[in-house]
Figure 1 (tube, rainbow, N blue to C red):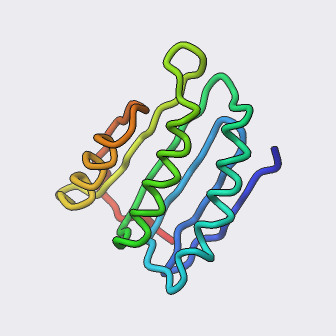
Figure 2: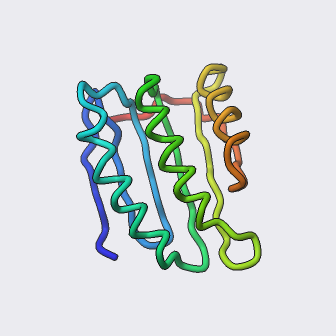
Length: 129
């Protein structure tokens, strides 16, 4: 599959999707979330048709608003359809700023909705965009 790269802005995530590595970082408060997330979801839907043996999903957010978190959950639920503990190794690393309980709790909520294992990492600095 061809790599999908979306340059981060002060309002929207930086995204890098390629076989075996899916990365989302920054702040997500876009005016039109559908414009940002539709091509991502389309890429993910193609990806899960023939996923590699291992996929790392790295999520490193400074802030993500409610509409963006709903789209993110939809993306992760789509990936969850392809998750099989025996057939492919998929894992999520959720990075959040030290003391940012809201972002940590969002990760825990999302974790409760999917089967893909999640690891949590506290980072000192905010994500640069």
